[in-house]
Image (cartoon, rainbow, N blue to C red; front, side):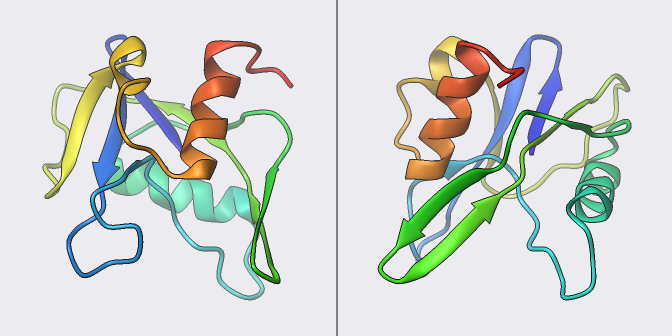
Length: 119
């Protein structure tokens, strides 16, 4: 999910001991069986105190080995002053985010948001 606040985007760094540790990524939530991408996005947005999430283009499809991963991207804006503090989370300007080590999906989300977010 793309969470924006005051011209900045929220990224979370993966902790040591996790797959892809040290990489930065957009906050995400796995979709539970029987759930919908929008319902999962609403839950994630609410956990950060954000408004209603809007779909952000088509899903990004990524394959690792034989596993096909479909990432639904949503965008929500935080307009309140109180933002929950989370370990490893930090606000970046869009231009700063380009210089961070991101996962392949994170790079695709960033590229899409910097070029044509409606695609």
